Image 1: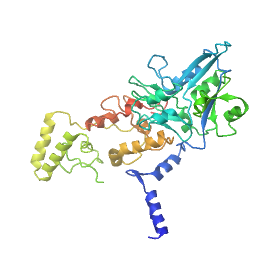
Image 2: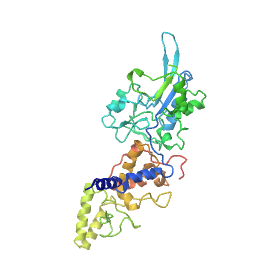
Image 3: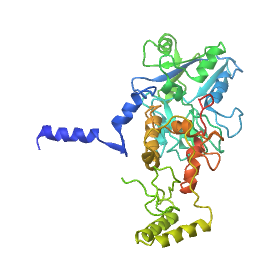
Image 4: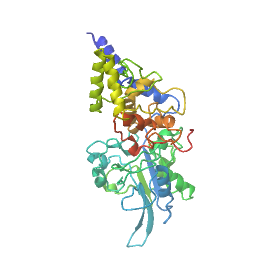
Length: 247
Length: 168
């Protein structure tokens, strides 16, 4: 067979790859481009957050409440309840300086939770969002032990009345998704924001800025260029997507 | 792939196909999982093929007398639209493959809103009375799965009713 002939056959074979009976990759792509479906996660984007701890008010839990409402989490804080975002009060003993800090999944560039996951359920999307695929999660909780930020929770009890956009259930580990359903559905991704950032802005604090760190014109990019921000446990070299200002 | 024959219900062999309006027997579809019923189904098919119509009818009568375990599943009409995303026969046989395939594109690739979504199923097939696909035994998903003895865990995590505010 000539080289050209071989390539032609190979191309035809690829185009006809059958993923499920009657479904080919090309059809999934076409279906995704029709109507409202989003284009999917792009590696050109790096979603991140900048949290200004000097603006975060002590005692305010609007971001936590908004997260619970958005994702259908139980607002009660019990020993076993899921917490995707927590408010941490910190104090420097020497000087007495206090700050209030919201901590959630830091969406690392090199996430330890992904490294340790035995099934591949814990994964990083092309756009930098670290997620758990609950279809593959076996609930071993290695990721919870590996995470230096204690960002993940395990669902211990059967759940009911989940949000259609946020499926979650007993036996799986879960954490902040950066409101991935909002991002995927957004018509204009430069205007998309998370529930916590939205609530913080609405409350007048404006301590949380969400955006694309790869877009030089986004608000978050301009801010991280202008002010000094740090990663939590920067010594670990995880390349977090969430950065803190004023720590 | 030939459409499944409805040869193991109360109708005579070679009777109504799933595309007709009559009661639908899906037990053959699930013969892989529900091995006991599948074997019985095959046995009955063989009897029918032997040409003994009377034996087939007696068998059917015996099954009806055993109890209502084989009552055809209730399939409630979708509340929206006039056709599914694929033809009915294809959906009956392959819906799980469509769903499984698209779920990976959604979870890992972030492609939402393509046509084979579980949310799409629920938006159309939630019951008019319960508002759910899996609450009452007659609701769309559980009705067939109970009949075919296929245990699904979709609804351990996924909502069984459309989002509030979505058109009924």
